Amino acid sequence: MNLAKSLLQASVRRIAPVALSLVSLAAWAVPDSEGGPKVNQLNLPVGVTQISREIYDLHSFMMWLCLIIFVLVFSVMFYSVIMHRKSRGHKAATWHESTTLEIIWTIIPFIIVIAMALPATRTVIAMKDTTNSDLTIKATGSQWKWGYDYLRGEGEGISFWSNMSTPRNQIGSPENGEKPNVSDAEYLLEVDNPVVVPVNKKVRMIVTANDVIHAWAVPQFGVKQDAIPGFVRDTWFKAEVIGTYRGECQELCGKEHAFMPIVVKVVSAEDYTKWVASKAPAPAVAAQ
Ligand SMILES: [Cu+2]
Image 1 (tube, protein in one colour):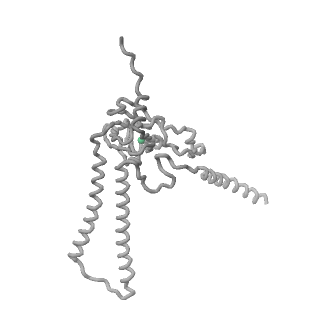
Image 2 (cartoon, rainbow, N blue to C red):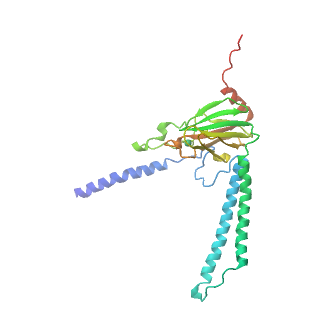
Image 3 (cartoon, rainbow, N blue to C red):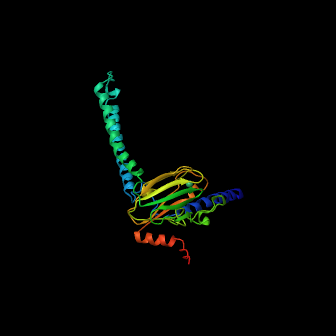
């Protein structure tokens, strides 16, 4: 009797924490992140730049093409297997080397490849065209933060570090059984100093790194560029909608790889001028 009771108590002790953690999972409900990932988002974001829309359309086009090929190939295959099976009295054909057939199954895939390659190449070339930019900003990846230097255009000379601003205690410490508090929509996607850029202006991003390989990426802009120490790579975007956009380092760069988000604030031309003024060093007292 006592044994049964203590067994029951022991199992309750084991099950209770599991049940509790299931309950707290429900409490982890996260809202959509502004400019970041949406809850239950499965597809790519359409984005707010010409390039990101082209990437989205290319991706959809390729997926539909693959689906059509899949359905066609498998329907022919299953039709042949089922309708021409041995039990129905069909005998295997013995012909081989049909020149007509070989020409057809070379030409059709060739046309499909060209149909995929042409628009993809056009977009890739456009992605690399960093000429005629209005603004040049250098992003430097560093374990585990981003440094920004405004090199050319309005705001030239502005320079700052951008650190993740999600408080450490909100992240919790799993090794001590502490749960993170992810109810904040911008959890791990918020920084102290966001990059600020004007809307509808071509921004050239020069991307490099201090220590190991990082990657500067903002999905809503269709931008992702590896940041490689000793190398200078560039990419560009022209955001068409005012708002805040978020990305993350996308090359595994060490233990805090997940903790170096990228936040870009796209503002109106007037707000950008105000921001530049607020960042400018106090004017030096004129020498008498
Ligand atoms: Cu990194």
